[in-house]
Image (cartoon, rainbow, N blue to C red):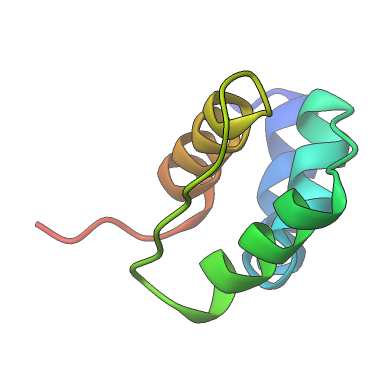
Length: 78
């Protein structure tokens, strides 16, 4: 039996697949900086990206959101 929250999430998956920023906001209340916003746009269109930046600027935050996004919204390939 699915819970109401799970049903709502499953209905929103098509929106999240097109908009990782919406996913980041609704799941984590995360507001990206300009460069993080650019990375999120690249993630949706490219399957490989590289980020080079200083220490403590938020690379781990966008990595954690990207892993959650990929795991929860994209179909798995076995």
